[in-house]
Image (cartoon, rainbow, N blue to C red; front, side, top):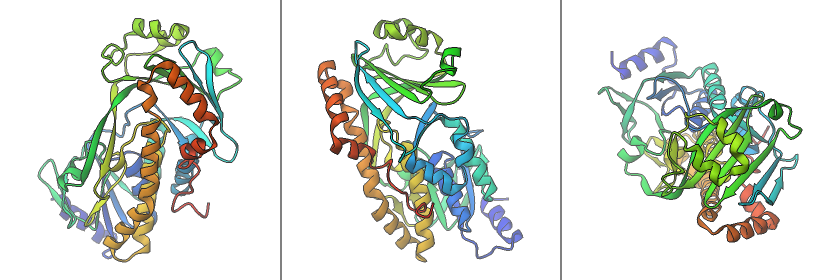
Length: 393
């Protein structure tokens, strides 16, 4: 039986002939958020993940107030932040391990540092509770504006809505010619999780994040559960030694001698990913909407890649509920939601530029930006935003 015939049989068996259908490609933050939100609003939703299991790249993640509100609206909040520490302060230290900037989050805006897989699992569980069917080992390769989704095995299905949430290398986005710009950035990261020591478990500052710099290399130290630390090592892409996997620990200890014990504890399971920036001509084409990294990948300098993806997944469902005409819904969705996402990309890109600067200039920039009320407002605008669909929370 073809995927299309199987879909029609499901609809008929449920007695929901008039129920709108959605096929979502990609079971990441954005795709699962959209799946939850559409199912909550009466859609019959199916998610396609090409991998054999739902897994996310990277290790830890910051979820700010905006993302937390989305998780609450979708019914995934409690599972997503279980045992995760509230991130309440952040230090930036220079090449001599001196504190050059300090930021403390106030109580008006929550921030959690969480294991990424835990958030994915929470969203997937919420989606299934809402009636979403999640299919693994299901690879979609192309879409048409008329709502036809094609799969790697040659099967096709026709649907009312296709959501392309298939990441930076999105085949669906590219099949529709929506890409306007794809820029590989100068830096990248290796992300890992490491078990806490007894001292770290008993720390008096469990929510303290520290960003260490040495030349153009950086180590981000973030507690993300009661048992684990999230460590991100960033470097310029042309730094072949620093980006090597397995990690060349001797080289990293030369750059960060005061972190030798931490570096020795790091495992060999990390991978290097280069940061990039993606912009589209438009976020939709006919019955196809593009969300998440496929639509607006950005560097992680303000921790809002997943936040924007989840916000836009939720707001997509809200706008499709507001307008009977899907094309009108998608047009208005982009008009309202894209400006904040574009702002987030600009700020995140700007805050990554100091990676290539001389240490003294970088230290001066960080000191100044931490004291600038205007810069703090720009950096936290997305975090303090009340996402569409969460106004009543």
